[in-house]
Image 1 (cartoon, helix red, strand yellow):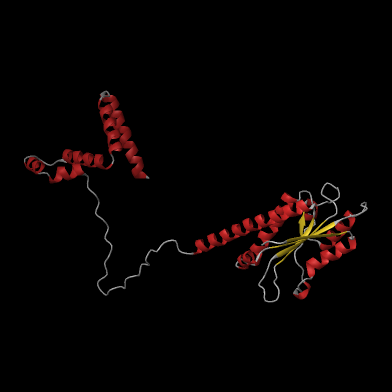
Image 2 (cartoon, rainbow, N blue to C red):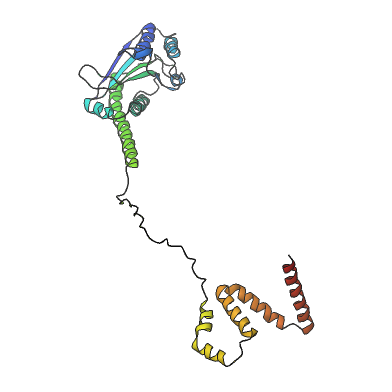
Length: 289
């Protein structure tokens, strides 16, 4: 069962002493260290945990009020929730509690301002039991005097329990996701490297150049061989075979060259001779380079 205790007093000096007590004492910290002070409300959050500024602000807020009221809250968790917090690292646990305090007062006691400290120590024969000490200013953020009725205190208790459990579950899910990301996803067997066997070294051979289907049919076909035996194998056959082979390797380029030759044959003789001369000059220029 979660427990919320709310008490009040009217002494500014006592409020300053309580800030010092919450930050330094209750259980002794080594080397004079203190706990982090967190603010409630925009004004106290802007102090960024500066103890002297928070004490001065609490004293100044009482000026002009005949009967200033300083509310001090102690918010705890039950044993089961404390055991769940003990499984987390101190930083995620403190982050979850800090967010729960901010959301609790913003929802159940809107407008209040002040400071709070998170304690995560236990007692004799008791594990770490996180709890919060919160001291509220005698003025609201609007400047009006602070007044918290018993009904609002009950709302603070209900909201505190709900916010703590939500924040704790969120941190636990983060821990589970981090754990899952570190574990291997599959059960793929590890491949073992086969030992090298003594034997002749196998050299990688270059694959033979592929021959087009039409060229293979032209060279290996029986009818073509019989036809070629009765005729002279001159340059025209070589040119035809070369063109067919080029068509199998680059059909688009072969089609462009065939179209050019067809159009050139339609030209008059003088223009064909001039075109042949230009082609010869182009080949000569390329050879000279």
